[in-house]
Image 1 (tube, rainbow, N blue to C red):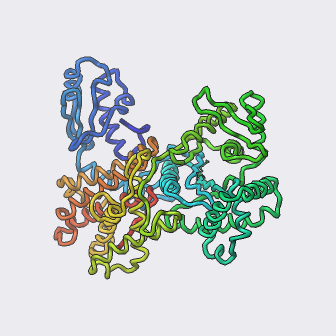
Image 2: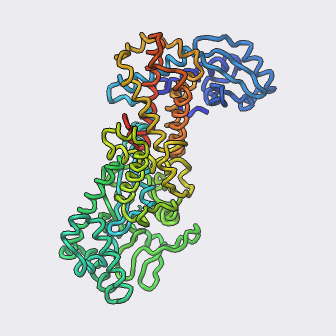
Image 3: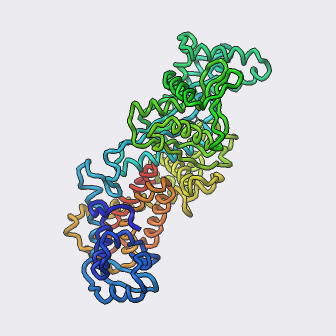
Length: 586
Ligand code: ARG
């Protein structure tokens, strides 16, 4: 199945698909090239492309196939057609295939001005704006694995939409408002320390929160005091807001550093505190007008029972706002500000009901853009604890990943001593391991985190991917006599066409633009992970056969080196799409 209209300027395999479609359409009037094109699928193992004939409804498939076969003439694009029951299999002409794909990878990676997308990218989203909200931890509470998943998946989606031409705004919607801040403020008077705050704001606020929570459990007056404090905050009382402002700013600063470690960047740090009260009020007024609000002992409730979404509180008795109302008001406000074409919320499936409720409310309010909101959900992670216990903070996860990896690398003394900067390298590989484990399967699946698997260089793991990339990078370093390579038109690639290993690798490179398009359609990182592993496996099997060092035929050696360089570029691009920093050495 073709994933969009043909665009050979970004995906050269489209030219081969078009060539197939032209022949088949010519043999089978009244079919058009477009009709056939959408039926040209990738083939199973060993087959480049396949068409399932029944979809055209032209009668007996044997007769239909015979017509195509009778008219077929091999040329520089398509070499052969083979009928197989209801299918027609097509093989591309290897010499052209290899030359065209490598030339495109090279040109779009190294030669294009920055305006033209790099290899793998496309322009389908040009002119469209998307807001992607992800990570969104709660200040003074723990950063749990759910937040980590949101960070990883959201970071990937932001890269993906950019690669497809969209204008992306990455947004972090902090849990920086709510009664718990009244509680912390109350507790801070007793347990707060300026020094500890400056050392690690996230940790100190969490400690205060834990302590004052205990007090509140024992003494209802603490709770009442906290509620009064939060009311003052909601009313905009500057004396009640002063400390909170500092806490928020310091937490954001610390988070931004940790996200940078993870290679994740946000354009906007917003938060529940930033949602304008007027938007929430307007929303409530509108819902009241529409008769959707019920009064429940002073609290306002929206009744969504006819959509099986229960009843939800929108405003408490004391008039303070809550999570749901802030999300409703926040979405309206964001639309007014950004006029987005699409807005994505990357939030755990535990909040499916919450997201469904607030999307529903916006739909009931007749906002036409409500249908452009999307919840990207994901399953739970079990077992992500460090050797010191349960994970509470993001920096614990990063540290543990780095340490686990560092210990693993030290086991191979010889290799370890050759690593220039083991601290950075082990951290990068450790983070890669965590990310790959997270993105390897469908988002919605729960999975059990496993440090042993994460650190392994064998099997489909992060370290294995980094190793494959490093190996590809080492080729240029080990063969300086071949550098610089002549321009592509002067590299003789005919020897590659004779090797099934080379053909497999290059064909895979050719599919990368489709891998990106499919990922956008499914909004799943797993297909990109699978692609990166398939490519790494193809390299592993070619490695001993298609050597560069020691190949005396200089033309052959050059062609191979060029192929490996293109492979390095595409593997690197896939890893960067997954927010991984590919390493050159380890
Ligand atoms: N801060 C929330 C939590 O940790 C997640 C926020 C999700 N985004 C949203 N717009 N509700 O549970």
